[in-house]
Structures are given as structure tokens and as C-alpha cells.
Image (tube, rainbow, N blue to C red; front, side):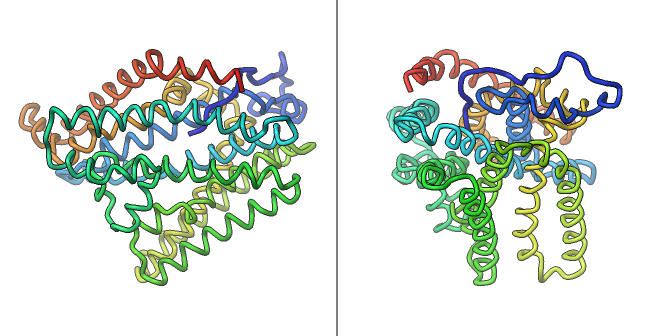
Length: 400
């Protein structure tokens, strides 16, 4: 989850013509600044973390009754929040790299800023959870995580999960797999951007996206386990590289305007494919796994359009992504992601919603209550972490 540079905001015209009341006009699009902090993208990040919280606090609960089953099933689509994170990271990181590729200390500045944003919290959590806590607590799941901690310290959690073929093979810290994917991307992509001008970078991004999709399809055809298909870095590069492709196009003369014109059609075609392929696999279930991987890329395409809409779309959409609520969750999304499943794992495995249901008399009410309280706890912990710990490292980013 990428962090922006020094805030500069989005420049909008002071007055819109009547014909531009519901969307950003051509002139307004040209005034949008993509360098620095863009509030709407905080809102996109906020949506992504809310989706992730939904699957872990609602979607993973075993439902009781049809209505709760429907709610929990809808919440499982929160897993796509990770794909949205990947698309947004590709867009932001590629933009930062492309804007600075000809500047001195290109690699040093980028890597040091990433280190200051990501490593302090990540390794502090590992130190506390895998070194300090086990000195005082002995618990089977925690002990298993301690035995496997080398995969976490080396940002290889996704590799271990792929080998094991089970999402919870790495207890408590399994959600760190996506952080590993992003870290691998951060390690390699700066070199790609450095070596390529705009046209070559666009071709490279398209090639990487197509390669990732083909790789996943081949892995499914070869009966590779589902976790490996979903968690290993090469197979997740389509979302990251498509975000990167969009960042390069947006920086071309009139590029953001072109993206704005294409976004509705792209979203419509992507959504149509998702619906049609879903209906097709209901009739021919033997194609389910194959089409699932293609749909994953289609969702990434839709998320690209969503990012464009957050910047230049209809006013109501821009207001949603620029709302304080969405930007709040976006600002603290990294901490929310890191912390929420450290205890969410135990809520899931201990079926605490069943226990709460005996108190409140309703399982669906218990599920919603647990989700609200668990989200509130994640927010409080993240606020304390950010303002008491992370922020002090972020101040050092100005040196790079």
C-alpha cells in the first residue's frame, strides 16, 4: 500500500459551467495534478481496506440462516480489495518512479522512502508478536507462526502459502502474503521504469499483465493448488502493471482526458464480461476455475476505471472518494491491514460470533456486532500506531 509524497492536492476550477455540473470537464481534467498527495486516491485506498475488513470480519463467518448467508457471501467479494490495493499501488508507485526517473539518487530516494513507510511497522509487529509475546504466552497457533517466522522476516509469506496450498498454513500472519507481493514489486519495478521511456514502459506493462494472466491460466490447467495461483507474485502482476500502465498514460499530453473518455466503456465491458462469464460457469462448472482467473484480470480493469472516476468522474462519485470517511480509512489503511487479522484470525478460528449470538439471541446480529467492534479495535490500534510510532519515521522521508 503505497504512500504519497508531500501534499499538493487536486487543483479544480473555481466555477463549473452548467454543462459540466455532473462531471469534470476537459479543461478541469488538464488541471488535475497527479504529483504528490491526491485526496481522492486516499478514498480509493479507504474503499480497498473496507472491503478487506468485510471479508475477514463478515465473509469468513459461518452463517446461520439464508439472509445471513447472503450477507456473508456478498462480503466474500471483499477479497477483491487486495486487487484494488494492487492496482492503486501500481498506479501510485509507477507515477512516483516515472516522475523521478531522471533525477539524481533515483534508486536511493525511492527505496529509502519505501523502507521508512513500510519496514518500521512491519518489523515492529514481527518483533513484538514472534519474539516478545512468545516469551510469556504459549499457544498452538502462535507457536506454529514462531516456527515459520523466517518466511515473514524475509517477505516470503506468499511463497510459503503457495507451497503449503492452504491460506491458514501460516497462522495469524497469513494476510502478510499481499505485503510480500507488493514488496517484490517494489524491488523490481524501479529498474524497469528506469530503463524504459514512456512507450517502452507501456509495452512492458501490457506484456507483464498478459503474462500474469496466461501464467495463472496455465497453472490452473496444470492443477496447481488454488493458493499458489492466487498468492505467488508473478501471477498477481497484472493488477500492479495495469495500474502502472494507467499512470504512464495519465502523464501524457491529454492522457488523463483519454482515460476519462475510455473509463465508462472500459467499466461497462469489464463488468459485462464478469457477469456473462459468471453465468457461463454456472451452466458449465468445469470451466469455473479457468474463468475465475480471467475474471480476476477483468476486475482489475474495472478498478482502473474506478480510479479514473475518483479523479474525473461524476461529481457524486468524486464526493464519495473525497469524503472524510473514506479518506480516513485510506490514511490509516496500512495499519488497519497489518493489525486487523492478528486478532481477526482468532475471531475466525474460535467462532466467536457463535458465542456472541448466545448473548444477543441472534447470529446475524452477533456477526454485525462483532464486525463493528473488531473494526473499531483496528481503528484505535492503527491510530495509536500511526501517531505514536509510524509518523516519526515518515518525517524522515523529507531527507530523500
